[in-house]
Image (cartoon, helix red, strand yellow):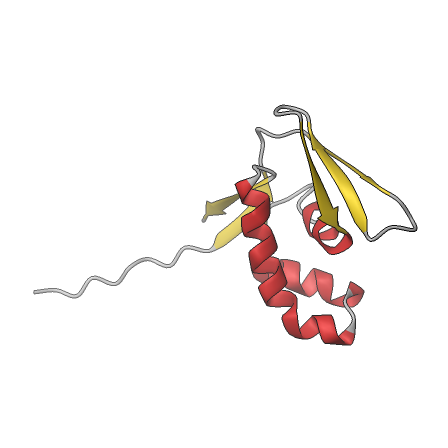
Length: 104
C-alpha cells in the first residue's frame, strides 16, 4: 500500500482562442455589450466583468492575480466580495466561451 498524493496544478485563465469578442461600452453606463463574432451572440457585461476580461488580453492569468488587479477599481464594500465575484464571473465567461481555463 502506498499513498498517492495528487499533483497540484495551478489554473490559469486566458481568452478562448476560438472566440472573437468585441466589447462596446459607454462612459455614462455601468454595462457594456460584448459581441462574439463566431456565434453572432451578444451579451451584457458589467464594467467589472469587462475589466476582468481585459486583463486576459495578452496573457494567461491566475484567479488570485485577477483579484489583485481588480482591487484598485473596487469600492471598499466590493473588496470584501472580489474573490467570489472573480470566481463566478470566470465561470460565466467560460460558459459563453469568452475565456478558457488551462492547468499548468
